[in-house]
Amino acid sequence: MAGTFKFELVSPERILLSDEAEEAILPGAEGQFTVLVGHAPVVSTLLPGVIHVKLATASTKGIYIDGGFVEVNPQSVTVLAEHAFIVDEADQRQLEEALGKAETALGEAKDDEALRHLTCAIDQLKGLQRKKAA
Amino acid sequence: MASLKDLRNRIASVKATRKITKAMQMVAAAKLRRAQEVATAARPYAERMDAVLASLAGKITSREGASPLLVGTGKSDTHLLIVMTAERGLCGGFNSNIAKLARADALRLMRDGKTVKIMTVGRKGADNLRRDLNKQIIDRRDFRGVRQLSFTDAEGIANRVLDMFEAGEFDVATIYFSEFQSVISQKPTPLQIIPAKLPEAKDDGAVAKNSAVYEYEPDEQVILGQLLKRNIATQIFRGLLENAASEQGARMSAMDNATRNAGDMIDKLTITYNRQRQAQITKELIEIISGAEAL
Image (cartoon, rainbow over all chains, first blue to last red; front, top):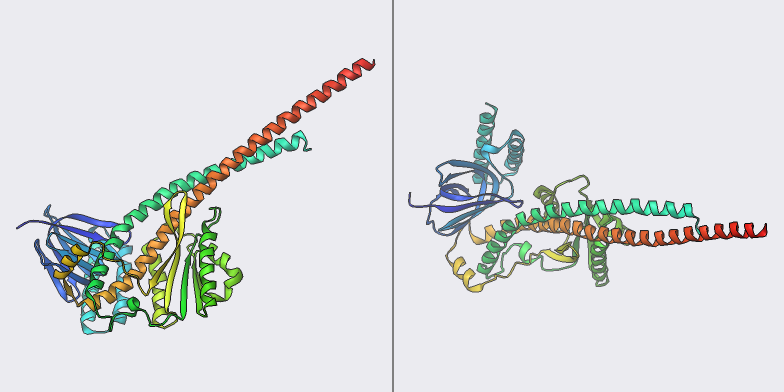
């Protein structure tokens, strides 16, 4: 791997995660995309879904966000999301809440793109729930 | 002249009051620290948001088709004042200062022939404004029993405001809150949130260089529209947090004053008590002596 960049996940209440990362997969508004070090500067909105971050310590973290936006620079990635939680640390209540919200959004979704994405996010959440329950 | 017993009772009651105000001061100090921590933790988000908004707004030169959240509805007939206050009193002039500022603005706008709508957040503001602006109050929120403000609370208010804006119920929205400057100074501040007053790009050179190379996905206009909506909630959240810190600061200094006052009062009462005790002893002695002389 060529190197690492700074990955930050910021919610209005606090900084949830700030660490060196090698790779981040983000649910962008125009399709999922992967960021490696040296990525061209991009500002993009994010759809509800799971962000996968490969940290420099070689561990992978999944983070669920219900929408937000990201600022990508060659040396840093900053995700701003109102509601976010780290998948491994989430409890049933958080999952339940996020699922409820995603389903309401699904009911209000206007175009196919959003519909597809929300369905995907809901599937991911349900999968997580099953995994937690097991 | 109050009797010795009365004086003793008064001293005891002022002492009890002093104990309470002292305790309240210490509680406020502890809460203030927590409120400040929360406010500091919320800062990175707001700063990043501001930075991105500023660079986006800089890119959008034509105002054609821009979001009404940014450029307004083109008129300013109806004003929405969102007045944020505390749930509790006993914090000096905190609540009434905010309400006073909001009331002055509301009356000024009404004199200019504008329609004023008021939304109160926090019980004390509603109580304060109800007297003369009851007709203007369209909604009240309170956070009674909420121990720690969360972003969801701010979102609730923001969604209501956005719904009203989309329904065309007002043209300009302003939030009133108290800016936390220090423990002894809190400044009631109005902040216009719709149409948004965007932060000026701080360092023109650097921002221009940065924003020139950003790619936007989807395009600038769409992102800006979405960000502006989120920004409303962020600004309201910021207002709420500032307010929470200010409230505790105001309460702390108010209770500090009260404690000191009680101390002064106890000193004075004690002097009066001692003097009177002395006078009584002297009087009794005189009575005894003159009684003995008469024999």
